[in-house]
Amino acid sequence: GESVGLHLPTLSVQEGDNSIINCAYSNSASDYFIWYKQESGKGPQFIIDIRSNMDKRQGQRVTVLLNKTVKHLSLQIAATQPGDSAVYFCAERWGMDSSYKLIFGSGTRLLVRP
Amino acid sequence: GAVVSQHPSRVICKSGTSVKIECRSLDFQATTMFWYRQFPKQSLMLMATSNEGSKATYEQGVEKDKFLINHASLTLSTLTVTSAHPEDSSFYICSAQIGDRSYQPQHFGDGTRLSIL
Image 1 (cartoon, rainbow over the protein chains, first blue to last red):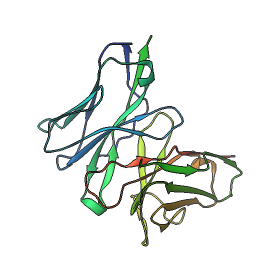
Image 2: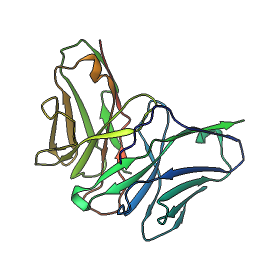
Image 3: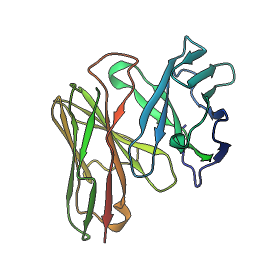
């Protein structure tokens, strides 16, 4: 269901290390998933997406893994940089085409230590 | 490409004032736009789906008479918070999807910080 969090879990990583951010989604019928990055005071920025007929997709320095069996999504960031510090949200798509909507996860704050 | 512009970025006003927020898709047409609300350290909560030329679809618990949505063209949707009160203070964010194509991400504006005194 919809996610409402009272605080954000935080992942702290050393610059240059790889980061893995996890997300559990709720609807087994969801067919499309998106990862967004949100910096303070700004709107979410698209990072990468994946359809439910795939289990892995790679972008530049990022990889998304989808495990439909356990309804789990992860975002891997290679060689994490200070500019990667932000809050990361996964989103799942409910509905069909013209009536679909995105349901956002509770988010994870990524802190990159220099 | 896929730029969404939101205006204003910040509003501070007195209780009882109505506030209009604009959301524009700058380089694409958006049949559907979405309005979200985000409280500090929380996730985005969908308020309503705005469809060009028709009435908006509101999520459960969102008052349609309080949050008026107008999607007058394929590049503009507006959200009006009527008779705003301190509890309406929040970060309002809009998004848009390119046309009717499936499996396209929503693209977000940079939000409007609304503070009601």
